[in-house]
Length: 283
Ligand code: AMP
Image 1 (cartoon, protein in one colour):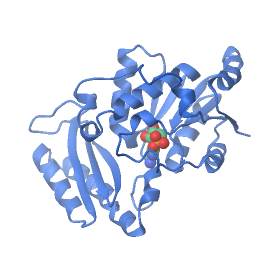
Image 2 (image 1 turned 90 degrees about the vertical axis):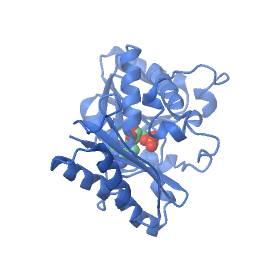
Image 3 (image 1 turned 60 degrees about the vertical axis):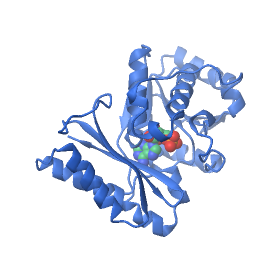
C-alpha cells in the first residue's frame, strides 16, 4: 500500500528510521498527472532502491506569469494508483505553503548560458524554480539516488551542473524518453491536445529521428540539421515552432559549424495553445 503524506515532518518521521536501518532511498520528483513516462522513472527507482519516494507537487515558482500553473492537471487519486502499480512506496504531496513557508526569497540558481538557451529563452525563471524546489526535495528526503527523465533534457543538464557545483552527494539517474506507439513523447500536457493536434504532434519525434539518421549518415553540418528539422516540422500546418536548436553535451556548449557527438537536438513547438518539447541525442 502506498503511503501518502502532505507535510515535511510526516515524511521525515517515516524516512528517518528507514535510513537508520541502512535502507537506500530513491526520489522521483514529479508534478503529478502521472503517466507511463513517470511510471518508468518510479519502476527504475523501485528496482534500484529499498524505498521509493515520489513527490507530487505542481511547483508554482517554475511557472511564468502567463503559463499554465492554474490549469495544470491535478489528479492525486489516480497518481497514487500509478505509483502503486510502478512499485513506489511513499507519495509526498505538499501544499505550496508547506514547500515555501516564508516569502519565496531563498533561491538556488544555476546561472550562465545553460539556463538561458532553449527553454530558458522564453521561460526565464523556470530553471531557478526547478533547482530551488529540487534542492528543497533533496534536503527533505536525503535520497541515495534521484530520478529524472531525458524528456526534459535541459533540466537534466542544469541539475547535473547544480549537483556538481554544490557537491550534492546524490546520484542522478536519467531515464530514457517514454513514448506512445506513435512516437509522441508522453507528457502531462498531452491531455490538452485535441485528437487532431495529437496526431500532428507526431511530427516532432519523426523529424528528430530523421535528423539522427542523417547525422549517422555523415550529415553533421549544424545549419543544415537545424534547417531540415525546421522544414520537416513546418510541413505540419498545426505546428508553430518556438525553437529548433542543437548544443554540445555535456553542459549545452555552443557548437561551431559542425555537430560533434554527443549533442542535444531539441525542439519546442506549439500545437494550438499547448507547448510541447522533445529531443534526441545525436551520437
Ligand atoms: P513532470 O511531472 O512533467 O515535472 O515530470 C517529472 C519527471 O518525469 C521529470 O524528470 C520528467 O523528465 C520525467 N518525465 C516526464 N515525461 C517523461 C517521459 N515521457 N519519459 C521519461 N521521463 C519523463
